Image 1 (cartoon, rainbow, N blue to C red):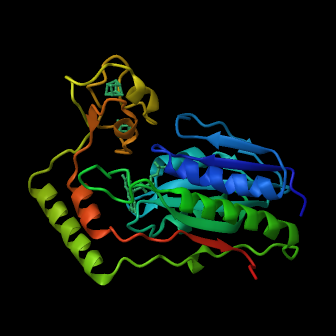
Image 2: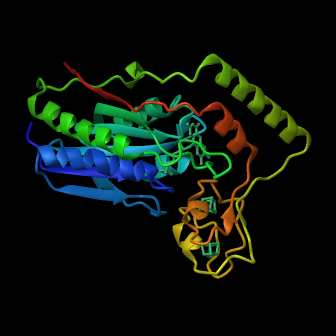
Length: 285
Ligand SMILES: Cc1cc2nc3c(=O)[nH]c(=O)nc-3n(C[C@H](O)[C@H](O)[C@H](O)COP(=O)(O)O)c2cc1C
Ligand code: SF4
Ligand code: SF4
């Protein structure tokens, strides 16, 4: 098929989804030199409606939160519509599991008039990863990015040669890389204990600012995707808005923002083994 433009649309507070999508787009454009238009909706609180045609392609991408697409990502991607437009669905997760996220992204895409033709479930450093409790630190790394680029190239060739009409991809065929029985069981036990404790003694976990370190550069407020940090008053966080994405923590130039959650240790202890990225194409050979 002829393709006029490639679009990418994503939500990516800590940048792992963005880096993965950009690598896929690089590969695609290297194979088929079409213009690539990026819609980074991380900070787009009031996204404008967009309509794509059948001779365009879009990469729709979101991070996984609690096994689902991040709700803010959903809200920011929902205003883009297609007209039988081929879509590549990408979920990025922190080495635990992507669970329902890819199916949800596919349902969202179909509702909006897109036709899923490719999908990827890729690993990104976990938002809760810390020096003490590392979880998929540094991912996507060079190997991940070159795989993503190769997928972009395969996708471009696939769209050029695939049988017409293209078959819609069933993302339920995507394999979830296994975690092993022991880690799964330990993590479930941790979650049940956490919920029990929260029921008895509810505790609100929010990022904190170390006032002695903070240089009031304003970067955290500017980077917050939901405007939960007041500019000029960066030691405050609006708990009713904060989605615990950790963009402020990872973006602080002096390490003054921290998010301490018992999930960091539990995830780090149980999901150390490197998981592979998985890719799927419709009517693939
Ligand atoms: C609130 C929240 C929930 C998360 N839930 C999951 C999860 O269920 N499974 C998983 O593997 N990673 C989970 N993660 C990790 C993110 O999916 C991962 O770090 C992703 O790379 C973040 O994308 P970004 O860099 O584009 O923000 C979660 C992160 C946050 C902030
Ligand atoms: S990014 Fe860090 S140093 Fe800058 S205002 Fe926020 S907490 Fe303070
Ligand atoms: S305040 Fe909350 S929502 Fe805003 S960047 Fe920090 S963790 Fe994310």
